[in-house]
Length: 130
Ligand SMILES: Cc1cc2nc3c(=O)[nH]c(=O)nc-3n(C[C@H](O)[C@H](O)[C@H](O)COP(=O)(O)O)c2cc1C
Image (cartoon, rainbow, N blue to C red):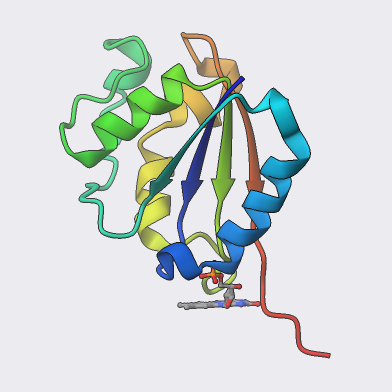
């Protein structure tokens, strides 16, 4: 199974979210025969323009060309996408949310997706203070 991990931590390799995700990957064992990591921090991803071309004209492809283009192709090729996301202000870090907003036609909203959809899971750790 081809697994794509999309990590949204600004801490990159020091990310606790990534550590948690790697533990999950260990649990997948040999099922995860190929694993690729993408970090959204530092990518240039424009906001969605709400043109709806991905739904009605371009068969799931976004008409904007930036770093999201390559990531969306990786999502298309993956059997499983793991959204590895730390909690920022009770939500998704803005750079990752920009990517998510660009992918509704092929990985977020299943009912309108015109092409096969990879399985998708997400992990969002938060600070725990006892
Ligand atoms: C900008 C920012 C906003 C955050 N907002 C929250 C929050 O709303 N609730 C919370 O419990 N933790 C919040 N945190 C803490 C992170 O979710 C937590 O430290 C997380 O484990 C960081 O993961 P990472 O090591 O993968 O970057 C925030 C951290 C940052 C940097």
